[in-house]
Amino acid sequence: MNMNNQRIVIIGGSSGIGLETAKLFVEGGAQVIIGSRSNQKLSQAKMELGEKVKAYAVDMTDEESVKAFFDQIGPFDHLVLTAAQGAGGMFLDLPVPEAQSAFESKFWGQYRAAKYGAASIREGGTLTFFSGALSQKPLPGRSTQSAINSAVESLARALAIELSPVRVNTISPGTVDTPAYGHMDEKVRRDYYEQVASRLPAKNIGRPRDIAEAVKFVVTNQFMTGSTIEINGGHPLV
Image (tube, rainbow, N blue to C red):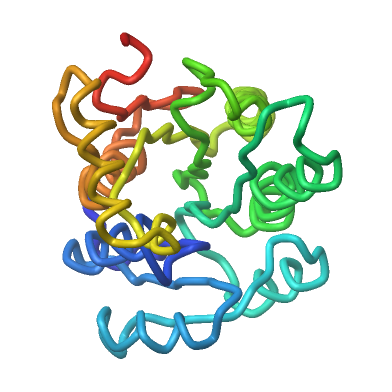
């Protein structure tokens, strides 16, 4: 599929995987629109991506904000949903409101964006969700994230049928070097990355570009729908 003049909307496109995905599609000639809660991040992203990229504020946890976002941008070809926050903690210790907040962000946030964005997707277009490797192999202290990721993947499969011929897929990444780990001290973060990489068959963690290329694959492959692309260094195998 030629991406020239294709309009692609990336919510979460101001940083990390979303920003790298935006860069990849800009390089391919697409017309890119990014959304984020942070106006500061949007401004910084536009400086990196170039003036042709359009940027709008949107909060996926706010239904009216999501509606207004799609009203602003009009019809498009592809919608990619990368923005979300998670919650970690042992099941018996994690407060229910924290688990609910994580669902509100990652599951219900993507649900809202899909619900109000689907009608604007043109014929031959795509909708791409994001889950995570914990749906394939849960870990202690990550039960909430495992449940959220599995719910996202199930929703995407159902929508591949319900929204046909729009193609609907999910990207399920493992550990990726992104600003999501920016709260860690640099040495702690590097040690964590090395520890994770040492356990994986791939012997390295992911880069944002690795995931962005998977997004491009599902967007451009016209025979793919209802699929979950696992790109995790072999996490479920160990």
